[in-house]
Amino acid sequence: MINLKTFLNQIHQVDDDILNKYLEYWQEYHLPKKTTMTAPGEMEKHWYFVTKGVQKSFYLTGDKTHVIAFTYNPSFSGIPESFFQQKPSKYYLETITESSFLRIPFQKHQELMQEYRPIETLFRVAIEKILFGLLDRYYELMALDIETRFKNFTARSPHLLQMVSQKDLASYLRIDPTNFSKLMNSVRI
Image (cartoon, rainbow, N blue to C red):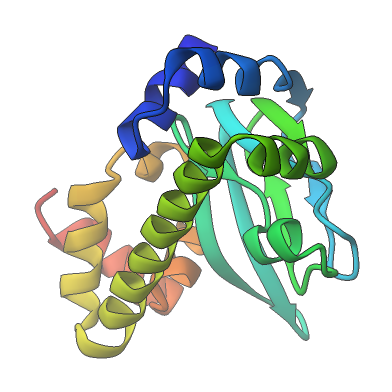
């Protein structure tokens, strides 16, 4: 719980009494590797904070997997638009490795945001950070060549090279798996 408290305070400072009240409703949750947490058409019922493991969100087109994001400690996990808008998910969330989380149900999260304005502000700022991260990702995918995307990724998240399959990393970076393999062998990390 201390890690979650530190993580939340790095997003936006909240008075300890209010934050502690909010944290009371987060519960531990564990899943084995390769477990589907959310599938298309399902509603995201919880918001997660990753304490252990790696997860991926992805969608399928025919038999091709398109990886949207990876989540790992310390970060939030879930399908944001499904959770915050309570609409069915358009894609999957799956554990890659054995994973542990703290999680809060939607209804309790909403109640606490209505009761405590600082919690609502905290999550407005968190959603802004998620949005800005997505815009940076779109920029990289559209404006940068594959080698630059690869270098930026390995500088930002080198640990994922050991935890995630090359096929998933290539999908995430929108690089053909053969070219990804060539980059792994030729680019100094």
